[in-house]
Picture 1 (tube, one colour):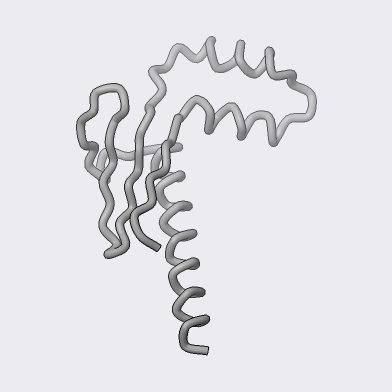
Picture 2 (cartoon, rainbow, N blue to C red):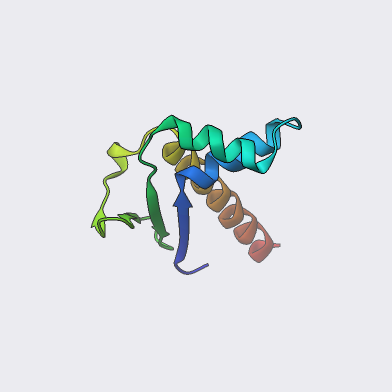
Length: 98
């Protein structure tokens, strides 16, 4: 498996979620909604290591972000990625032992 780096851009996460769940909003309307929120969106790089450890880097400040500071969409993203990687690891082990 090796090291896996995945970038998480919060605004893109919400944009995709809105577009997937609304057949009545255009791209332009979704952009207007996101602009009107007036939020500072997070931009993180998650680096998952084969031994199960992980680092999170804030791409705006280049500082490490502790897991305990994740909330909302970034925490949801982390949990989904971790579950995906665990499933892949288990499948790999099952296939090796078959």
